Image (tube, rainbow, N blue to C red; front, side):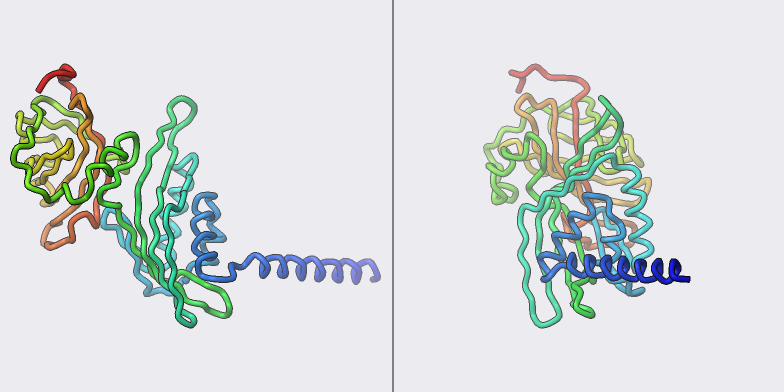
Length: 292
């Protein structure tokens, strides 16, 4: 009997110690809670994410590509799948601002979601430049994330071409391009939608217009300035359309950038750049470096 009593006392002491450690690890303010959630995502720590996110059944949040989550179970299923598929995740925060009023806080954040997929020499690294906004509430002394929205940062493309895009400046995207000579981009291009790893081919004329092999799609170029190439796309096969912006390499044989929806079926007036993904273009009929 004494052995059993000792065992029970020891168990109670252990549980008390674990509870104290858990309380000590609770973030003391909303910024700490946000950073802990981002770290838990990178470390594939679903229990911590669950603890720091509210599970209300009617909470609605949005992520890239137009995806929508209602409640915790739907988000949990997708996170489990992501943790299985991604070999490694890195999420450096580049900017975070938090405002607090009583038991409510809201934030804006910019980060890079970096995922590694594959094994050995076949590992692929993808950088998703994201911005996020969200609202937290302090419940029973614990800060929890309620609702959030994330989208791609418009002019920050990631990868080796990012610095050139930033140097061009966002004002260039809407400037008059008269006098800006567009290189000949005619030929066959391979298009990769990075997030879904969808590949298809486009056949363009020298002005950047032509069909592509995805739901009967068609690209139309609208602007070109300082290697920033803008245009629209249409896919009659699944009744969708949108826009794109890529940065053309100096030899005009590659391009990297973003795409987004402006209409999906009867859903019109979708804010540009809010829902979409990232592009990698590669010319299959290479042009010489000095070709115009």
